[in-house]
Image (cartoon, rainbow, N blue to C red; front, side):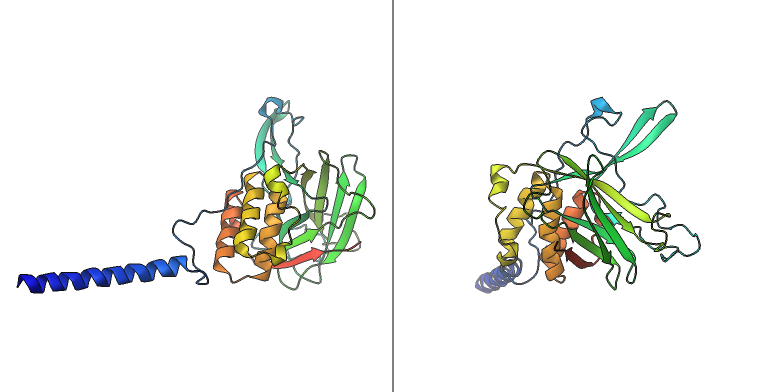
Length: 292
């Protein structure tokens, strides 16, 4: 009786071990598309962009708008090409900070939209709830409001997330380290009257010098790297507050591999860390890499 019990007990132990090994191989072996329980999520750690000692906005923060002032509804002036209502608004996929500033006329809500890149020709990402044949206008200006670059694009056939890459300057640098540049994306709702109540979002970018850990990733060919290696670069940029570059590396890979579970989880984690998780499930539909 005792011997039979020992045999049965041994069988149970071997069955449990076999199940454990199968589970471990499912999580650990590459190619299964699953995320191990110990998975370390991507997380954006912002730089200090606002000095509370200068609450009048004269500090490091730069005001902007990640959503149109009109919310999800454009003006209903006759002739508008934009739908009257959409499920989600036009949105710039960039972290922002809301600050309530005290003025003589009362409290004022200000959204600070300022992030960083180490590249001379960064890419900017937006959720656009509109589709072709609508067009959008993108512009980049310096602090003196001098236009450095502008382009008009026809939106994709389906709503979703788009990236707009700024091409490098001919024979020189478009951006200078340490200086601020304002970008704006406008949806052309009124083709004949482009300044009339078009929906737009705007914010700021500053080029910064890369740290030694970041410098090693600047010359990489992202398309040729396995995702495990590319993820180290994305994590490095995100942990140092280099938002535009982290999002571009990950966004481009997600555009190429929309069904990859690991990339989808990383995309969700990165957007969640910047309070943009509501847009993580939206498809990336286009990256406009425009040549001069």
